[in-house]
Amino acid sequence: MSKAFKDLEKILEKTMALQTALALLEWDDETLAPEEAGPYTERVIGALSEEYYQIIAGEEMKNSIAACEDEKDLTEVEKAIVKEAKETRAQLVCIPVKEYRDNAQLVTEGIRVWTKSKAENDFGQFVPVLQRLVDYQKRFASYRAKKGEKLYDSMLDLYEKDFNMELLDAFFEELKEVIVPLIREIRDHGKPIEDGFLTGDYPEDRQREAAEYLANYVGFDFKKGVMGISAHPFTTNLHNHDVRITTHYSNRIFTSFFSFIHETGHAIYELGVSDELTQTLVGQGASTGMHECQSRFFENIIGRSEAFWIPVYGKLKELFPEQLKGVGREMFVRAINKVQPGLIRTEADELTYSLHVLVRYELEKRLIEEDLDVEINPDDLRIDTYRSSGAGGQHINKTSSAVRLIHKPTGTVVECQQERSQFQNRDRAMQILRSRLYEEKVREQEEAVTAERRSQVGTGMRNERIRTYNFPQGRLTDHRIGLTLYRLESVMDGDLDDIIDALATREQAEKLQKLNA
Image 1 (cartoon, rainbow, N blue to C red):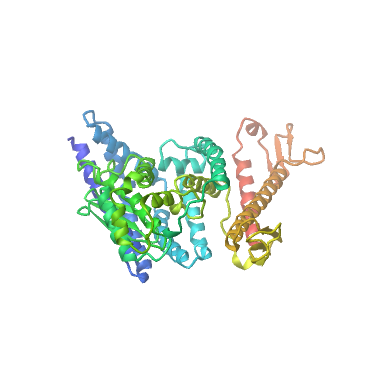
Image 2 (image 1 turned 90 degrees about the horizontal axis):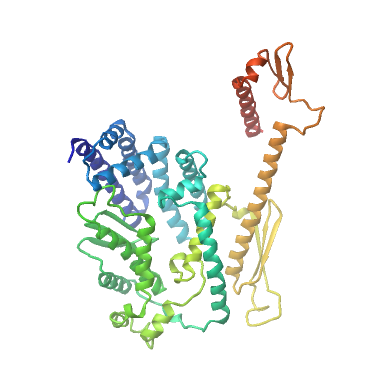
């Protein structure tokens, strides 16, 4: 091993230790930490994140990478580590350190606020934090983006190398064309499948016993890993001998089953990293896509197959004898494979799960590229319910399931009565309202841009003067900003700095005037 690479290793060892500490704090914050610890833990995470930044962005790291790039005898692993170190530094050094620290603390706060808003079914309390998180990500993407690169393309490349919107738009369009008609066909003509027994009184302690049993059966090594409880299941690791997964429990038994089978897939990926690579930049998974495809493979291809349940279904009936009374293995397997669109991604079946990813992609793209406003103030809404109209039937005209939303600031009215329940109609109406308000916002932005363009280029009428050029006097006058220069020849040769500076000053003054209005 060369001296240059040994020097780089010493630097990276410090960053690894900081990342390990951060992972441990984040695990604790989401699983075991007391409720009031959050703001204080945020400060610790902020301080450690800033220290990590200073090392990665520092001159010592820069010089060490350059020295390694000059080495001719590095091994393939060493070359890969140098490459990752260079890319990691490039992604970080363009971000101001204060913004990096503030964002790290905000992410921690965001998880805590989201957990509370989820428990209380109140999205509104999460919206302000979400807005700030989106703003930070857009700002970071603008720092990282190459010339001419769109912000969302820059962000996609961080998660999956060389992915972009052009590629994904085509992929998801093809997915939509095939899956949506298939789901409709199943909905309209599929055979009914009994799955009511999957929801009921399933004691949490027995769910945990089932989780540990199935995780061990799938291959999770409890000597190198632990299982916790969190609002949203996740996997983290300190190294390949300490991998941690979480799940959550509810009255829908298959939710916890498939969440920990999914997370076990992630965990086994991390447990499979070699001792040579763990705690290095190349010991963190080939890519996000590779990681996720293994967890989805465990969850769906293995976990939803009948062969998987043949040896273990007896244990399940032993743990839940009353809840699964009269439910045979074949009936259970049909139920866990039932295709039924729903609002919760982690509870989606194998077919409709892809549509959740599609919707997330389209929403993210609009959030980043089109300034989608995610907030509707509940105080701005009037919500009316009434009985659905129509030809009649079991759920028509008997309950107040229809919903009318009135957005008071704009007067926008949305009515929905297609669905069978008030909750579903309200959710659908909110989606339509968001879309209409978004379209109105885009229209206003387009009008503002058009007006701004007109103010800059004028209408083209002869009586509208923008600039005059007096060649005998060598004089140029810009009538929009009252600027006169007596060096027309140099301006015609391309020396436009004074004009550009004056135009920029005028634009800034106009923006300040609008802010103070």
